[in-house]
Length: 389
Image (cartoon, rainbow, N blue to C red; front, side, top):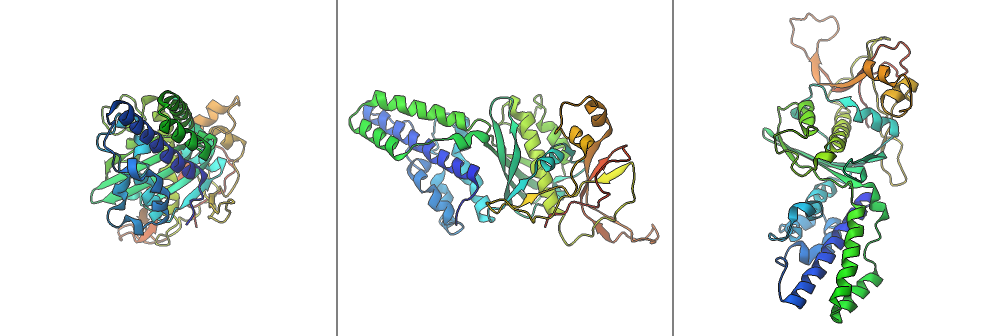
């Protein structure tokens, strides 16, 4: 089995080089000062086998195989390196669940990033896979530095609780050079010659290059109540003044970018969920100035890596592109943004046509995204719900 998603493949290489450099520093400190930086166990010993571990899943999970890549319990300043310490625990469920990756068009990304979740609750969010990844056509900038263009999503419900994680992968990962064979030979030679100063200088430069290439890589991890409103949770997540501890891994500067990433991740999951055959399509409405829906194409077109791409059924017109931030330099932008709003409607039941209202509602209607506007020539056809094959 081959890992074909380039950002995730580069992240694995960064993970292995991160531990390779710390292992060298650990050996230098022991040889020069007779001391240890941390206990040599877990990922310190097994980082080079991480690729084989992923290729062998799910069989390699037997005998608690993931524990072999746990960071040493006394690893220094673990909070600053958490992204590289816990990458195995995030990638494992993605591989086990089939390595599903979805691509977005630029317009689809813009629509999802500005779509309100409405009154959807976590119990309404049931993605078909416990873990999936999303490729973004337009990188999202992080105010604290860097940007990201790939997301890895994890969502699992247990009882009344929902565990939700989103990891972003830096756009600069493609620039990572890493430790090649020549560099590894130089490091080994300098260590054997006890040329520790030169060795330390090279490690410091490699570490600085690694950190520059992962700017924009952010990890999130939240445990929420299944009855909690997703929209309220997103507002709390984006508020730097929130007193809760649910964004403890994220700098305040990055909260706005992470909130957009979570909104896109949840939106894609809702689209995938809404294609279930267990619910009826929402009936089409007549031409209306008040309500229109955004439809997504079935997953037919794919990239060279066989990644299905979610596309809008109808291209956005000029006014819609202005609203969704695709045409920023426009004099009517403020007025258009005031008049259009996207929001999600929860899955619900309705009566069959002509049935008395006192009867129990039997027809299941899927969750769908609604676009409210006041323009008669809106451009999008009156749709029904999000379709993803």
